[in-house]
Image (cartoon, rainbow over all chains, first blue to last red; front, side):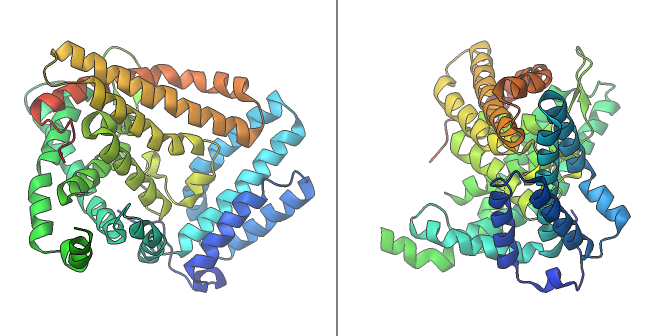
Length: 210
Length: 187
C-alpha cells in the first residue's frame, strides 16, 4: 500500500509536522467564522498557492483531489440551487480551501512522523489508563501488513467459487473471508507476546497497577 | 486490552480496508452495486462487539488520516475529512459502537438462528443506518447551511442500499457467530 506522502524539498516539506497540523486545525475553525467572499476567496487562493508550491504536478494533483473535489462540487451546486448563489459560493470556497491545506499536509508528512505525533498526543490518555500509546503504532503496522493478505484470501475464495461453478455472492464470500482472517488472531497474538513486543516496556507499570 | 483483542481489531480493520479495494459486488436480486466498505462498519459491530468494533473503525480512520489510501476508491489523507460527507466518516465510529452495543445485548448463543439473524439486522440498521445518517445528515446540513430537511431528502437515495447491506451484514454476522463466535466479548 503506497502512502500519499510525496518526496520533496519545498518550504512546506521542511516545516515540522506539528505546526502544519496546527495550521490545518486553525484553518478548519477559522474558515467557519467568516462568510465574506473576499476573505474566503483570498484564503482559497493562498491554499492553492501552498499546494502548488509542493511540486506535485497537475496530473497527479488531479488524480489525488478528484474524488473530494467532485463531492464538494455536487454539494456546492445543490446548495446553490436550494438556497442562493452566495451560499453555494461560500460552501465551495470553504471546503476547497480546507481540502487543499489538508492535502498539502498529507503530501508532506511521512507516515512515521504522523505515528510519532499521534503516539505523543496519546501520552496523556495513557496516563489516564485509556490506551497504551505504543499500541497505536503496532496496530497501524499490523493493518498495513494484513491488507494484502486479506485481498489474497479474497482472490483465492473467488477462484474456489469459480472452480466449483458457483456464483460469487456477497454472503458466500464474506463469511469465509472473515472467519479465515480472524482465526489467525490467536497465532499472531501468541507471536507478538512471545517476542515481548507489547509487554517489556510496560511490565513495570503493570506491576505497579496491580 | 489483551494482545488477542488488539490483533482482532487490527485484522478487522484490514478487512474493512480490503472491502474498500474490491470492485463493487452485485447482489443477485437487486441491480445495485454494493460498495462493501460501509458494510464493513456494520460487520465490525456485529462480529466484534462494541469495544473492539469501534476500535477497528477508528483504526481505519486513523490510517486514512495519516495519508494511506484506505477508503473506498483509493481515498485517503486529511483531505477526506474536509469533504461535505465527512459526517458519515465520523458517524462510522458511532455506528460501529451502536451496532456492537445492541448486538452484544440482543443476540444470545441459545437463540434460534432466525432470532439471531433478526437481532443482528436490528443492530445493523440502528447503527449503520439510523445513527450513521444522523451524523451524516447533521454534518451536511451544518456545513452547507441547507437545513436538516433538505439534507435528509438529499441522502434518502442511499438508504435502500444500506438496508440491503444491513441484511447481508446480519446474515454474515450470524454465520460467523456459528463458525467462530467472538460475541459476547471474552475478557
